[in-house]
Each structure stands twice: as structure tokens, then as C-alpha cells.
Image (cartoon, rainbow, N blue to C red):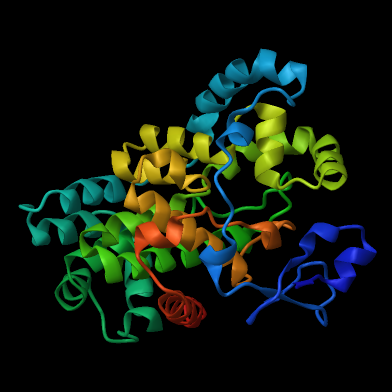
Length: 342
């Protein structure tokens, strides 16, 4: 049985119809009274992998086929226009990857960057970490929260400037990308806490910067916004499909190039590149975790695209990760509750 948002239907956006079940989701068409339902059985209605569709060039505009590589090279060069990842964050990523590193050195590096240190203290005292008002120094944060958690907070602090600002091409305001990124980061972290705790820091970092490619791609989206909007509406396509159609690549590919520039570890870079199509990661667990976390964030209403309700989970994702429906429901509830306090 299918249900659909009446408001969207009135606006000709019939693809907001979804499988009927028990998980509530409010459509973003602006009609708050319209409720649509999303299948809580996730993998039962998961999208089958269609690699021929993902890789086909047959239906792309001819100018895309001619200019795709040149445009991608131009976009990669423009990565330098992004605010750099603070050196403190880069160094701490390297230290955390080294199991023999000195925890005291992490505190020293944080304290060497006053802006990062201030943000770390503010976040460490949030309700999410259970230390509201109890932490007064970086050293204390290191002792009370532990090595991995402190590194997680540093990644958050370092990303705040990068993941801010409006994106007129995609139509996002300064809050939407940041909030979505936070939810994906915390969701990915909670998933691996249940399955592979060694991936906790990597999962959090991957979630935090998984959509950074959109920041670079935004001005190119804006240049073709009318054509892209018409294509999405007439062909009933998602933004991701529109990126592939008009440019020959998508924001996830650009994000992976940014990760290389920032010297982000290879497993995080791969997960970000494959977060919409984890089947292309050769069974990589982190890629599937990030894909599920992104999907749950959008289904929980913490997204920013008009096509969020069209988000599909790749078939087999739940089996690879090894979660059941109750696990997913518990994780989603805890994350949305915690993020509200940040």
C-alpha cells in the first residue's frame, strides 16, 4: 500500500509517495499537516543495485560526455578555495591512527590552536557527552572523555567553519548542511559501536564530512539551476541523478578528491566516495555504515533536499552491517535526541 503527501501531489511532485508503514516523516513541501509514512522494514524494500544505470552514459547530454573530465579537473583545482582543514585537526587524526601515540600530545596540539580549543571545550560540555559544565580544560577533557572521544570533538570543531554558509545552488541555508552532517556522524558512530568499535573515530569523521563535495559543486549547480530543476521535475529524478546527468560525476566523487587534498585516511575517503552506492566499495563495512547513517538521517527528517523522501537503501546493506529493525530504531531515537542538545 502506498501513501503520498497531498501537498506534493498538488505541486506535481508525485514521487514523494512511499511504502506505507509505521515510521513517521513530515514532507518538506511546506504543508506541515501532511504526514507520509516510511517503511520501517528498511531492507525489505531496499533499492536493488543498478550499476548499469549508475554507470551508463547513453542518456547524458552530449556536452557532458565531451567536457566531464575537463570540468572535474577544474573543480578539483577549486578545492583550494575551501577553508583548509585546521592543522591541529590533521595532526590529531594522524595521532589517533597511531595506537602508540601519546595522549598528552593530543592535548598539547589542541591547546596550540586557541580557536579549536575554545570550540572543543564548548562541545565537550554539551549534553551529548554527558559532561555539561564539568570540563574546564583540554587536559581534563582528555582524562574524562578519553582519547577517541576527544579526537571526535576536535573533528567537529575543525569542521564548523567548513560546513557553514549558504549554498544557493542546492538551496540550503547555513544550518542545514551542518545539522545533517552532525546527525550522520553520530548515527554512523552509534552503528559501529554495536558492530566494530575500532571504526568509531573513522565513522564519525566520515559522517561529518561526507557531503563536503556539495560545497564545491554548489556554484556549478547554480549556473545550471533552471535546467537541473526542469530535469528533476520532468524526469522525476533526484539531485544525485541530476549531478551525474549534467556533470558526469556527483558530489561524493568530488568529496573524495577533497579528502585526498586534506590527507584524510584512505578508508574514510573510500566510504565517502561510495556513500550513495556502497556496493561499489567491494564489501567495505564503513561504506555501508555511512550509507545507512545518511539514509536514516534523511528519513528522520534531518536532510535538506526536496527529494529526501526518495532516499533509497541499497539492497543487502542491513545484512552486511548485521543490524535488525529494532537496532536501527533505537539508534535513530538516541541520535535525534542527543543532537537536539548540541
